[in-house]
Image (cartoon, rainbow, N blue to C red; front, side):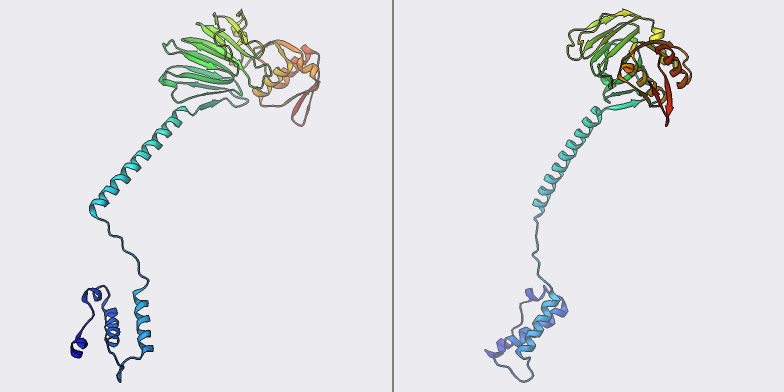
Length: 317
């Protein structure tokens, strides 16, 4: 019996899980542990403990091994792929909506003019300091323009309506040439429409049903106090559109608005000394105005005011 026990060896399935060098250490521990009595030349308990610790260091910390069945792996991969595909489609759809409806803007910087034309033939000229914006779906039947400032539009005849919105008004056309003026810094919120050719409909954003048709060579206005458009009245379109040739036309316009127009056109700063002068209305037509100082001299002659330059600013008083 004793001889049979002496011949027992460690289980091969256990040994095969260790490298060759570690198998030798395991054989040693196994051989010494199966003996009931220490014999001369055998390892002491202290030496056996040291051998075991040496083996543990070589083995390192044990880690659980995860075995995935091939069928389960394919099922999990399919679900992951479907989820990623759906997430990508959702992201792409959201990006396209954002791309189509985020506004695109064109600006005419102070002291300059800008011209722009869409693929459908609609052409716009922007006065100094003006901005237009629209969505990228413009050519897909939604031809809506947002205007801040002054712009001249040339719209070829089309079945698709062309709409210009300002802070107070909406202009709808099918084919025409017209001018719209509406500055966001105007305290009255006035929108002025001048029609050159064709026919347009002018309506208030607050009361869109109360609209008027404007015939060629006429002008109409809307402001915060009058949501119903003023009755169209005839006007000299060459004077009204003098800005397109770098000229000026002011008809019963307060001096404060005249100064703001000059600031945009010449990228300058004009200071009006008192409220009375700022509220004084001015009617003047300057087809070839020249430089800013020449215009200020003309205005002061008409309104009986004075001016002087201080630190790059023009002061009127």
